[in-house]
Image (cartoon, rainbow, N blue to C red; front, side, top):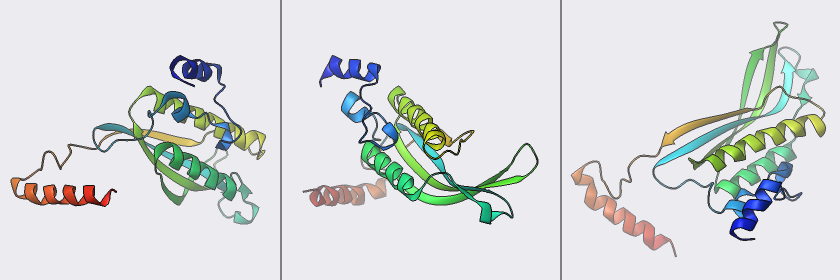
Length: 184
């Protein structure tokens, strides 16, 4: 597919494939290099908290599995493939429900940097919708929300081109040459 054909397929939703985790469209195939962050400039950073277990404080024995280990791995592979990398960890958070009970969620936490454009925003809006539907339709544990936070970040000036101090200039030039030699 090229140019206009990709655009039409994207609008028709035909880029959804069963091979991709949660049915997420392949934005890279459809639109080219619109997701991956570059080394400098303005970007988005997304943090996703994917609920793994949910329980009331003090009732850990009655915990419900929301997303499985397989789901966690699939999402990690998806983000790594589409964005070229992902920071991953586990975290726990809690909140008070309408009845005043403390609800605890164990999460898989993902952080991804992407370009600052509308396609990246659409990617994560679609992903959040697909994760909510997966929790309901596949896992049968409907979720009110899945935390997806977007932050605007600036990776700053390129220190190789604009060293912050003159005394660092020569050393940074040598480092850049060394890094270029490592890329074969």
